[in-house]
Length: 577
Image 1 (tube, one colour):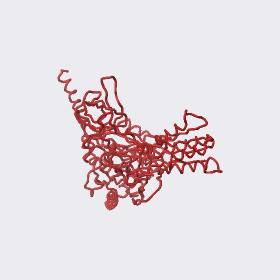
Image 2 (cartoon, rainbow, N blue to C red):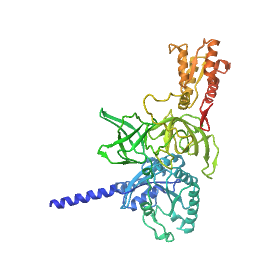
Image 3 (cartoon, one colour):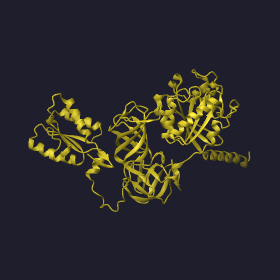
Image 4 (tube, helix red, strand yellow):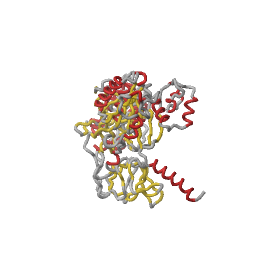
């Protein structure tokens, strides 16, 4: 073999790799009610497009479970869990990758069962398109409506309504047109702009990869053709710079870089950036990667930025474009999908995780809950699992965000239980409820303003207080634990244990810092008690005055009622008692 003949196949292979790397990627998800045929559709799509691996096909053929009348149960290709195959339903999100001559695809096969709605929301969170299946016999079901609502909330720009099981209704055009009309009306209510309705039979393969003669009355594209040609928008690149800092890299004294994933905009060396929350300004000196420096970086690339100036940044901070900063606020309105059996309660303390930034917060008000059957809004004081609502959040530290419609990365967050670390809900920010709190640039180290009491109260999300008790030490500790779990900054000072050299100075300092101080002193005189009352003002609570006979439980209930009155409330954007 000549050298030229050996080089030619290498060049062809390199060209093949380059062409595949440069293909556009479409992420799409399937959704719908139980047994609408989502997994079967994906299996049929992979099989008929000849992108199914031989071992996957052999595994499905050899499976002892076969719910299909044919030789292959296509749903088994994506339903990989044993419980899924035994029960005949999708439980977890199954991801599959395939490619055609036109485009690359990542599919998220999501569950249809109401119990696993949270998994559907997870799989749809990164999708560019949603394929919502509708059983041609059953029509639109409540879970179909719920999934369409979630797709709309998640900002998925394009939806395909796949009217499945057309073989069971004799491929009747009238039935398809009725369901098409119903879904288009639903999409209009939800604000879904781009909808394509396609009659299919996932089991038989009609209109999945190729158009079927059985639906000669249908003039639209087959599903795969539509997936290959539908426009894919990448709005994050056209916005201002958003770079959340995940990690500070300092291998030696000569290099200090900030690692993270670009969440918006295009970053180039020389670009001006402002750091949040400090407000310090600098310029990008270099974009560093393992393979060398880059001329530009854009979402969702993971890179390290080296700045021209030595400014203080840490995990959770954000570098942004000075001319198009995000909203910076502790109060915002968001749509939320509640995913946990533990109900959402107003004023319950939660952790709010937005990208790499995590703060404490609570729901100040549930604006309305969506009735999934009628799509009408209704008032509610709590949310149960799978509820969809619009709520108002308050956090102890500001978040840096855009609306979810503008940027799906900076506009989304999850709600976490601070005790169990369980994910409770997923939120999509709609707007800030206060004027942006974007800091001004610090000119010199000596010009920083003093931290005000109001700033401390906002940080803790409650006012300070002194709770005086002469009861047993166990009650003081029980109060401390209960308030701590509710999200209050609280500490016990026990005069009998004397943990501080000067308890009076200690509680005064904690009170000034915005804490709730549980002060236990069985020997406190009336004069000292009056001094405490004067120091605390409205934030004073004396358990000794309650004359409780029912014991610790009643005492704790009174303390918790008092503590709730300390929560920061907002009227016209200004905190007040």
